[in-house]
Image 1 (cartoon, rainbow, N blue to C red):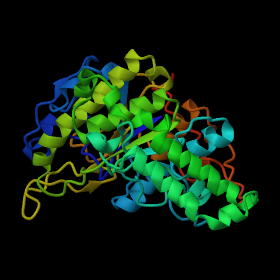
Image 2 (cartoon, rainbow, N blue to C red):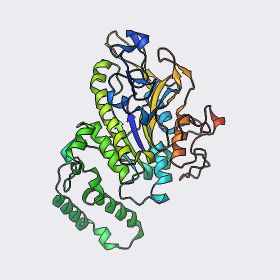
Image 3 (cartoon, rainbow, N blue to C red):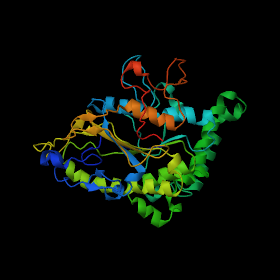
Image 4 (tube, rainbow, N blue to C red):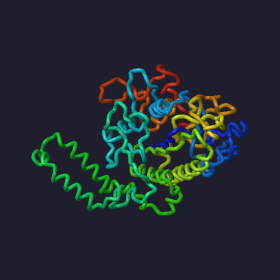
Length: 400
């Protein structure tokens, strides 16, 4: 699974649900959508490379939850749960996958089963009541920088020799560990240390070393933080990591929205299109779900006045997500927004329904039991009776 999380909420009108007939107050300068390689499907004019890959992904144009606050919207969109109820913080999808497809269920990789580049996703604890064991490994750094991961060098530029010297000094200072070498209480700490140093000095860390990729491949993804994060994500799933997320920041465009889109959309276009093509060429797309989206969309009506100067606000009533691979069909459009993109006109899709469909493709029963350290009798997702639409509804239009 590769999740492309657009922190702040991307504009659906400027990306995958253009509304050229709505006029300047809705489209601004982005009023010339382009055809894709799928008949009858158009997307935003700043996404020409993704337009050539539309047969690889499906667009859900009727996502909705009606929440305009970042924190609550992020929680709903990443967990499928609505806050409240039993006052539990439910785990995000990555943590659930880490639990049900990670180390406890046969995953043997040295890299943690849930990786996030390069900053944590949540405005809440991603692992929720599952606890620290299922939190993501957050890389930090910038994969477009040489020091991100080069053999013998860690992110801060510390050499292999210096790292090994630091480890030796740590052990020399560990008088308690030497005095009690067989104490079972130290075993977990020792295992954690071994895994950490394997990531820094061993073969596992080489997955993050993009100098091992040809320059042509790195250029294909784009020499940006996002583009190189997409390339790293491909390397991670190729290495068998169950869940990889990319936190793509900068989409909370209240001010000067169109200036930001002129910079960010070409970057996204290049990185995401390269990822889809590369996965397909390597035979990985059929077994890898790719999920693009944020916590909500942006207000279709542009805020031209001061202090916004052409900004877009938060919009949870109607927004867009995109899915590809892993059993999702390509070249489809699910649902429809109204003429201005302000409301769902046809086939509303709640995050719970989308996440339930993703779980199905990952081999996880969305209404099955969720093991947890609290011993609570809980399903992975709430049943339909607890709120409509429920996890029992499927995105049959795009499920293989």
